[in-house]
Image 1 (spheres, rainbow, N blue to C red):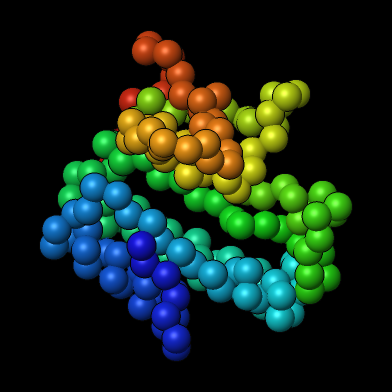
Image 2: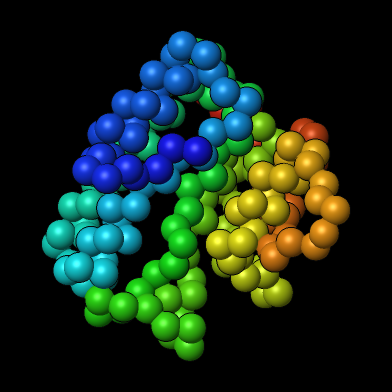
Length: 169
């Protein structure tokens, strides 16, 4: 896991991740970019400062994807981009839907193209589902129940429109 150490900016975290991918690609990599959350708490959700942090995080994700592409790993890698929570003002609360609903984006082998998870009436993706989905894809089972469930709705049957079969650069 790569996360923010004291004084470490997203570029440092991203530099480490891309260096690892280039030199000895890990089988599993979790990259944590907490600056969007930090900016939300410090300046407010949707503030210009948070929007700037989102831009920096977007560029960091782009660098990681480019590193995977250069190593010819992008087509064989499941990438999930998510947030731990949303917010309003400078805080978040359990009863506020702006806090509970998060972005959750997945791309990779077997992931269907253009799937809108919000149209599934009985599906509410939670942050805990990220681990459950990764464990599902990796074939990891746990001896004890875990919070979360695999988001299997992202996967499509063979022959369907899949993200991994779209044009390559």
